[in-house]
Image (cartoon, rainbow, N blue to C red; front, side, top):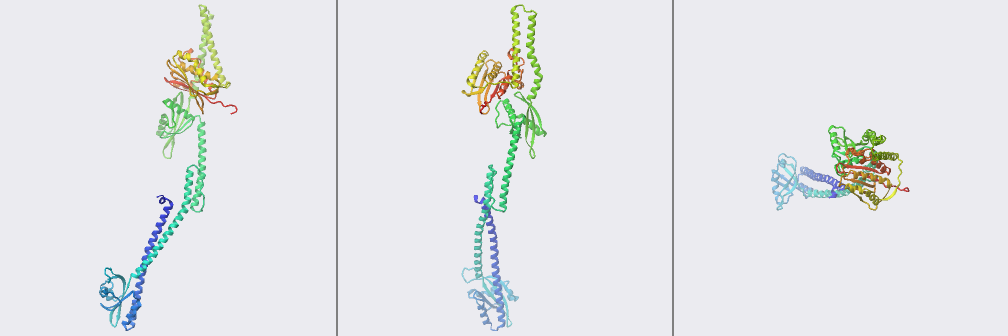
Length: 595
């Protein structure tokens, strides 16, 4: 079955059918030609013989002798019959049905013209045979009128077609033999020709499969200078051009990927069905925050967020870009969705995700900074001033009251001292003057010791505090004092904002690519979404109603962020109101000096 579907089979069948059709038509025409030629030849010979016999009879008075000589001249295969009307004058027929010939001849519509109109007639007809069961004898009859001694006579010459049919049969066998030889030669030629054509085509097919597998340097050998050779040359040129185009596309793709990766804005391209086609790191952060907000993790197969699809549908309907805004996990995002056009319709969209958190945060901080600093300093200064005036005015009625007012002045001065020291530390860190003392720390013992410091405070509030170590024997290089300062601040905040019966966990895991990851997770009240973007800013407090004794200076998380930044790490926060907060910081592996 595969042979008939191949080029060789199709070409062989086509050539064979074409040659067979031509030979069949030629055979039929040749057979018809030879048959007609033989009949015409016999008729002409018989006519000439009859005319010579008539002429000889006119010239010679001895009719019987002339007829006998004439019968010998025409041969045994030709029969002669001389009639006078219906009477037989001379006959060379021997079979018993010869007596019926005069009536047969005279009753024939064409041959009767010899008797009546005295004209020469040629005809092919069948005569009865004396062989039982035979259908008769096919013969050619020539009738010529004869005028002798005033009497009207007729001469008829008969020649059987049996010998002619034998000659035609022999000729037919020869023609069929020649046709068979021609078909065999045609088959050999067709296979030779098709093989010559199919061999380079097969090589081109193999080369095309190699190109389809990505081997664009595959070449087809050029063995001829005909159209197939030109096709092979064009194929090789196509491979070179395709390789060049693929390299150009790869470079363009890498160039585009580099541009997308270096962009500060997020970029998401998606089709009209919502399937994400391309993203960059800022867009991935947006998608992570979106799916975290919805309560599940981001998967590679997830589609584009509904907020972007709604903007895309609006852009498709209005045929222009659409702009929207959304707040996720304390970040303010501006969404710009522009449709992507195909040849005849919109095939998708590109979304620009712009994080406006820093701009809006700076606007807010610019408005709040002076108020926060004034508030932090005004209260202790007012208290120091008020109690100092009371002491100067000797308002206190006893020494104990004087001591109590002096203690308040002392506590507030200590608070202002701590505030000033924190500000100085923060300024030194932000200016890059922080010095880190790296040590190799055994994480299990280190985290257990820090968590144990808060066991008393946790027990007072009926809060469970525990550590979860993914790698029990892990060791890591960092500044233990600075990281303890970070963990102390995070755990203290977690305990203070977790209600009675809650839980605080310190989770540790190591990612070979990212580094050491530590989570401080609580089941507290959570942080409002609008405050998430500001928790690491100085003087920022999410709960504006807290008293001073409970809330501190508002600089702890800002200092923690700068310590993590100094370790070239990263600290993030995720929170849901009423469900809890998770602070996560990552410390990359410290490279050795020889590395």
